[in-house]
Length: 502
Image (cartoon, rainbow, N blue to C red; front, side, top):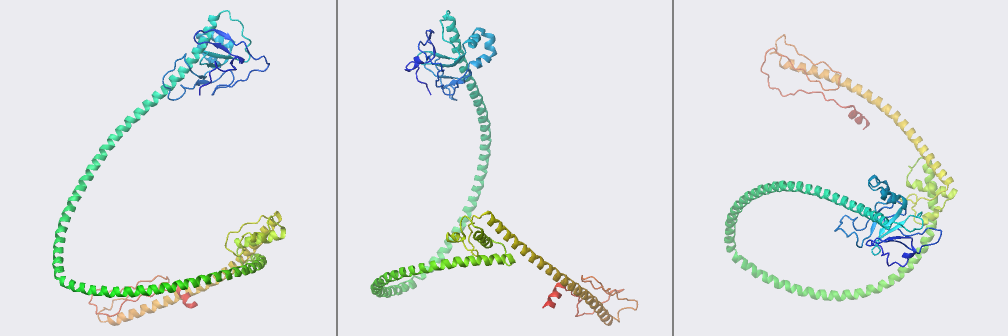
C-alpha cells in the first residue's frame, strides 16, 4: 500500500523532519516544529515499529513475484527490514566505513522513508537536539546519501535472496518433472503393451463368437423355415377363429353398452347418496364437538386421579424394591426420585414433572430427572442401596438352597452310576457265557480237544469292550449262521436319570 505524498500534506511543516532532496542533496531543516515538551506522535509505516531497530521492507519488491526493478530515484515507498541498529551491528560497515559508522552512532536516525516529491526523509530520534548550521555540507550530504544507498543495498540483497530461492525451487521442480516424465514414459509403454495384449484377446474372442453366431444362424433359419411351413397349414384354422372372434366382439360391445347404462344410473344414485352423507357429516361434526368437550372435562378429572394413583404406585414400587421383588430399573429410579422430592423438596415438584410430560414409573419412555436437594439425593441413594442389599440377600439364600439341591442330586447320580456299572458288568459276563456255550454246541464236532475258547474278562470301564474271537488251530469251513455279534449298549447316567424323573 502506497503512502500519501508528504510534499502535498498540509501538516508536513508541523513535523520534526530533515529533508534531503534526491537531486540537489540540499540539507534543510523544517523551520516550524512543535514547541511542546511532549514528544510528537506519528503513525509508523505498515510493518514497522517506533524505535532504533525498525524493520522495513519494500511494499513492491517483498512479494514473491518481484517484477521489473524500480528506478531508485523515482516514485517508490520503502519500509525498512534493516534498521540503524542492524547497521551498527554490522562488522563490515564498522571496518570499511568508520566515518559512516560514527555518523550512525552520533545522529541515530530512527525512521527512514523516501518521499515521492521531496526526496529522502530522515526522522531523527527523540533525543536528537535542534539542528544547527552544518559547516561542511558536502560531507553531510555524502553521509545521508550513503545511508540511502545502504538501505537500497539491503533492499537489493533481499531481492537477490528471494530470486535465489525461486531459482532453487525451479531447479527442484525441473528435476521432479524430468523424473516424472521418465516414469510416465515407462508407464505408457507398459499400458501400450497391456492394451495390445487385451486387444489380441478380444479379437480372438470375437472370432469365436462370430463362428458361434454363424452356426446359430443356420440352426435358427432351419427352425424358422419349419415353423413357417406349419403356420401356413394353420391359416384356415385362423380364419375360422377370426369369424368367431368378430362374433364375440359384437357380443362384448352389447355387454359394454348395457354396463354403461348401469353405470349412469349408479352414478346418479351415488350423487344422491353423497349429498345425504354430507348432511350427516355436518350433524356428526356438531355431535363430535359436544362429545369432545365432555371428554375433555372427564379427562381433566381422570388426570387428577391418575396423578394420585401414580403417587401410590411409586410408593408401592419403592416398597417392592426394598423387599427385593423387583429389579432396579428406570421405573424404580423414577419412583425413588419422586418420593424423595415429595419428602425433602426439589426445584420442581413430582406432580408438575408428570404434568409436563414425564412418564409414570411403570412406563417405558425416557425419564426426565428432577432436580433434588442434597437430603433428597441422600434418601434416594439410601433406598436404592437398601433394595440392592435385600436383593443380594435373597440371591444368596436362593444360591445356598440351590447348592444343597445340586449336592443331593449329584449323590443320587453317583449311586445310579454305580448300579449301572454293576448291571453292565453282570450283563457282559452272562452274555459272554451264553455266546461261548452256543459256539461250543455248534462247532463241538470240528474243534479238537486242545482247542480253547478265550472268553473276554469283565471290565469295569463304561466303554464298550470288543468280544474276543474263538481261536482255532486250523481254518475250518464255518457253517452258515443267522446270528450276529451283539455288543452291550452303554447308557449314559443322564438318560437313566431322565427316565427315573419321568
